[in-house]
Image 1 (cartoon, rainbow, N blue to C red):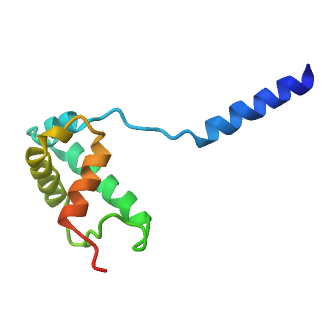
Image 2: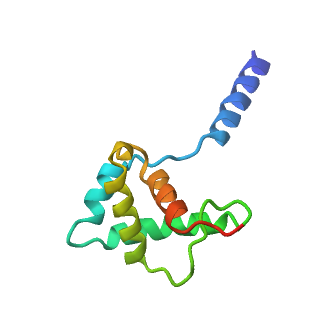
Length: 109
């Protein structure tokens, strides 16, 4: 019985180790946030996505965002992308941002 409990505990822990947090924020919510009168939270969110992309390193990054790009510029890129691709509004906000960045800031090969 102790062996079965130990095996079950290991399986549960190993399964949890592979799980990752996934945001519940969709493109619809992001668009609402980014077009609000106080869009600082949008800029912060999108800068975080840009930072995560940069952390991947140039060999694996889906986009190469120049250092000079501002939060406002990131917001403009993403808002335009959402307007141009309304069929993607229910995707996760981070996924939409990555698609937008990859189109606007393609890496040179």
